Image (cartoon, rainbow, N blue to C red; front, side, top):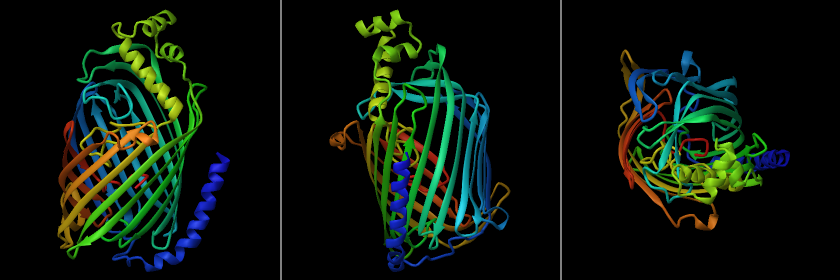
Length: 428
């Protein structure tokens, strides 16, 4: 851990030294990078999730609160799933140079899709829903920002814990109660370098952006692995017409295991709730009813304990027509292209009861994406999955991007309503 942090600091210092003059030749910023235009959104919405239930959620967002750069976001759930997700970003401790961000998630019921196998070969409905009665996540991030946000260096720490109490099929039916709840504990510490040669951090229309993320995943018990994840993303923005852009994105993520976790099949079967006799039976006769799923889950755990897990594909950022975390393995590769047509840049003020902001642009988009995951680097790209789609966005002066999209791929279609650009996660 210490060697990795030392290496990161050395790379950071060298990056600052060599890039300070390079940024002078990049595109000029077209607007203030520390603007304080306020905005807010408050909207109720229903939810339905197989295996979890249904109910209502209240979405709230406040941008540039009280004429500062502070943004806050909250989603509160009621009904079959109770809890909330909250985040606060860009609390500047030193104006324009150093800020804090934090996230807290606390839900009393959750559901996670667990596919039968890692990699690219599982089928659409080849998964079980792991339902739990507690999930808590905390994250704290500190960021140093330089040269009008062209260079940003972040350190963060995240921990999570939860427990699974039952397993359901892909339709959310046929619940199987687990004798001993499956505990989920995790921790990760990360370091991010963000270099931005674009005309605007929030809404880039020309230039180049690079972001690298090194994560340190410690072992949470004697049976789990200790490993690092190195990820990076490169995005090029080609100006089209006067105010639009064509974006091209490449992403790569690789896990490197330092200490392997438990690789013993029988031991993992017993830890999942089977008795020693049942574990022996499943190993000898894997086709016995109920054994196939247990063996499959244990084999996935063995791969994760041996190889580690890189950033997955699926969800709002990459391969948008697939569920969140759909494909995962030790290595990930992704390509994407997106045309963004800003057909209205009138700077109109929108002031409604539930929504207020300055419309910097109305944007129509079409996109195509392709990605692959594999346990071995040499297998990346042998099996690919693609997504393509279209959408419309409102770019707000408060810094938010109100985004509605429809996408499709090999496993059907997905509708997204989210509040940030794609490819804008920790490894942009």
